[in-house]
Image (cartoon, rainbow, N blue to C red; front, side, top):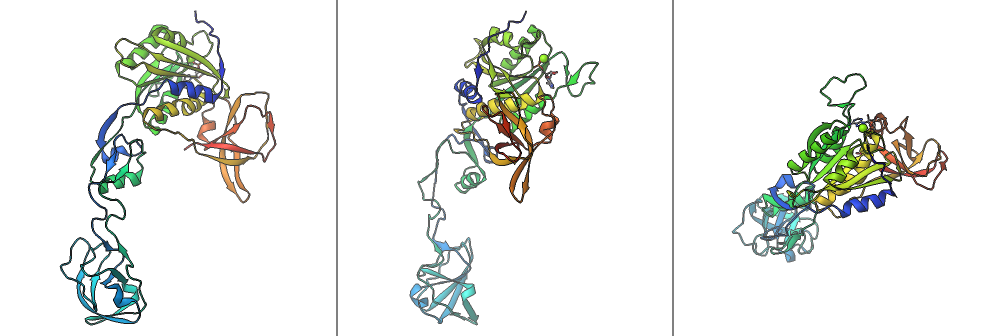
Length: 412
Ligand code: AMP
Ligand code: MG
């Protein structure tokens, strides 16, 4: 029979810390440049040359000697033209002007560019109509990046601008921390896969798909292990499958409460080490956490046992699996973007758990307003479908009037 483990009550932050402490940063791998987006760099990046390689024009105009255009008007002889991508063999002498396009190298003798807008062309002569300061519109060699300079350090998160910089530096592949492989296992005699017609008393598996989508969002690779029925040996078989598939993290849903068929804890205890917590949050009170051990494994595999109710499962994944996934990928911080908004209705409760109310945020003339998305039961997945945020009602607050300002974690 299942044992009713004592359950220490932890805050969300305490549980996050304990999970993070059991999670390691994974190894680097080399990937094609575009596959490195949103990942953490694992090698120092050094520039092989100056960018730009030569002093060049910032504008379309004329390359001249600064002394010739210090006063206006100045009449100069046009001695040729240079486009971006070519190096001119003309030397600009006093009284001469070379037509030059943006990005073209500054020719010998010139030190200043006069924009077309400030000139008038008349046959082979150009009149500069305003005085121009020597050095204007010349971009020096290496103004962006200097040869030999370390441009990006390991640990840098690669956003589009970093991907562009790597391309500019000639990288077609780059070393980043690899993505975690995450085994996802549903549990429950009542749960059937979405492709199956549910029988009497059966429901389709929402959690495995919600969680897999969250894993994808946060950079992991989901491994769908299906649903284990509520028998110890079948849950064990699921966990062993995860080991066989070289999972870096296992996420189960269901079977972590104190019901007669909640078996994840016992199985985890037998397959490694189990900790079972009551998290001071609503929805999502029970959470199993532990590590799966096997002589075949170099590293124990952390396992997060989510509660089965779909809202609890999703919010717990976001709170506990997301930081773990990000840490595994080498991220050093995992901020959850939030806004402040005013509740459109009062909140009254007896609970002292941290409450995550599902809300939809709208913009009004008086700022952001959060509307609660109907029934807030932990089985009401639709409360999340209708929401774009989670309003936090903190532990010590028993009631809030309409119009009270709350922090809203954004759901993207
Ligand atoms: P449990 O934590 O196993 O007691 O499950 C709590 C509730 O969540 C029950 O109503 C289950 O039917 C439901 N549930 C469990 N697993 C899933 C799942 N994968 N998808 C949707 N609902 C689930
Ligand atoms: Mg169950």
